[in-house]
Amino acid sequence: MSPFRYQLYREELAKELGISVETVDQRRRWAKKHYPDWRKVFLYRGPIDIREWQKMIACYSDYQYEKHQDPHLKVLEREG
Image (cartoon, rainbow, N blue to C red):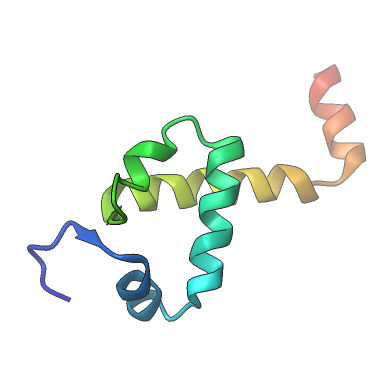
């Protein structure tokens, strides 16, 4: 990948990251529901902004962590 490209189409992004196009589509569906700036990631007419993608994936990672966190820890954090 060229270091001067800041946007990729979903097929290019999937190939670059070694994931499937379906995974990119799943992340888009997740972003539409949970990420307020999803339009900065998935630009009009198809390109994906790489820097915003990285921010969205960080948010996705935090979401997944919270989703799978032990319920006992959640209660202890609320009390503390």
